[in-house]
Image (tube, rainbow, N blue to C red; front, side, top):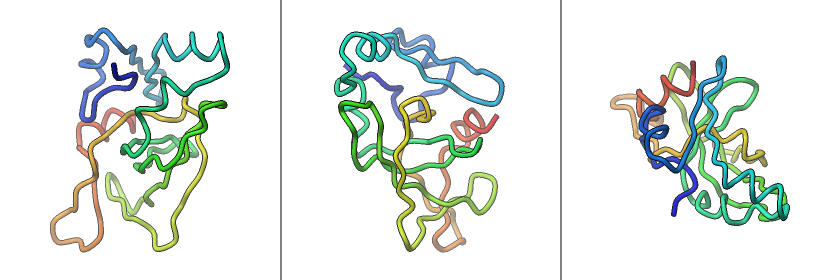
Length: 139
């Protein structure tokens, strides 16, 4: 059973799927799962909920802005995820930096799971995430 929204799932679809609670609070889209809270409270071991994030593309919130990236490691005890992030060059325009931009994020900073960012025609190395997902996470 997945503990995160499926790639490309809209906020409203995630709310009606039954396994996730997705709410919008101010300028942040929060993906919450009651199981995540139960695990954290009972054992301090977050390995179940975050296990499915490894090797997936996600959008993280950093300095109030959304950045796509790929989960490259997880801390099963703390519940943190290590994400290699893309850099932004405009609205929904990103690129992979030559030197990896890697940082540990708390699970609450993971806004959503996405499909692999797609190349933007005619821009060389620029990529974008699904425009509907970008609109939802950049509110």
